[in-house]
Length: 193
Image 1 (cartoon, rainbow, N blue to C red):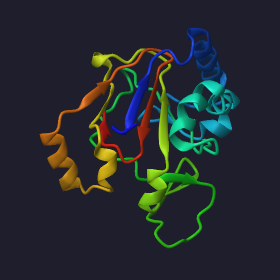
Image 2: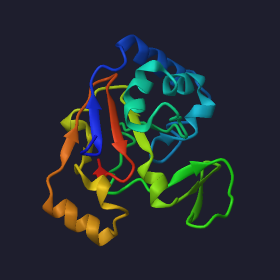
Image 3: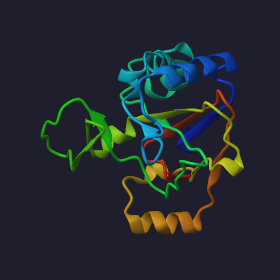
């Protein structure tokens, strides 16, 4: 993953995707009630999401990058529909979810999202993490796919001015995937949708 991302088609079968969609539909979560169509804390709220995160299909992708001790720390559902859609500007993932707020050197500022503490950790922590995006439906060019700027994960934490300059000068890649596809991204990789 020298470019900071990797795209894998057909990691999950359509049957496996349908099981996950059914579990999400029947879970006690309010997707449409949120302004942006996102739901957090899915590892705790939907057992099937935790099972997927620990599955051999996902671990086969993650372990070559992070090692056998890797584990999931957060599960989020983004449900972009014509009724609930939003533009995501170029950014890096700079915060992590934590179980408790414990003041520590290099960690901050703190926020709370859906009852869970989030914090910006030292860059070394972010460099050791990986986002795993599992697609439950097709995301083609007309669906607002995630766009990435390859290699930017190795540039450290970027200022707004640096991000603006990079995205104006460097070509991006659209990560189009069908249902069951998976996108791996380093946390510091510049991405938008």
